[in-house]
Length: 359
Image (tube, rainbow, N blue to C red):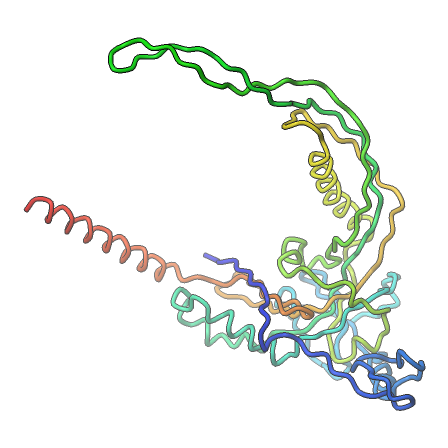
């Protein structure tokens, strides 16, 4: 048995803090991972050192789930953060011939805060957890990973047709029996007048993020959204220093189909909300998408995958906002015990009520 939970971040001490230092040249505040000063453009020494470290990353491909992840050059053994597999092989990123990312959002949640969030989440409803889950030593598997996402913007142009209904009211006379007599009364009855209508509709859509990782299915990625996209920065390799990062395994065209399906659903809803009258039926919407633009971006995610009794479970944290989602095992016998106790309690109450009623 498993439980799926999702929780929103709260405005407390968990809120991420952005640290800045003065520029070495002009004194302007510079964020910790900024390579250049936003005022004078001078390259920051700390960022330059990080950039050099990022260039030495090693790359591994998981033969179990297909994830391709960049790791620290000093790391000799590697466990896949997506499927908890050790069956991996090293590869060169030049062999993939994939486009580089264009934008990135840096981590705002620290590894220490992420572990604290995991411990707190795991302790929720703790009585229903298997007794040996806490001793599984799974916390150390929590890793911060830059995951690839595709972001699209496009114009939807639609032609639609529907039957439009408008309500009107009619007063009707009817007879009924009242106090043994037949009486005549009136009532207002709602009627609907229908007519066919068609038209055109267009809207610009953007902001839907499609997971570029086969290791992170879309339904799991949606659970830790939203990301605050105004914080996007132009990608530089130094952002990845000290973190894992994954190459995208879902191609742009496949991600585009997923995004257009989402935007088509939104377009249908927007057309329906645009229709006149009080109601409608038989709505048909034909949509074509134009002016399609795409960006490949890296987003910060803490990921933990672990196996319990041969079943894979996953825990996620949005590395920007701190939003938590995951699934964890439940103890079948403990749930059965709780249900049995509840049923016994109900039976005892019913028995007491019947006893008091017979006195």
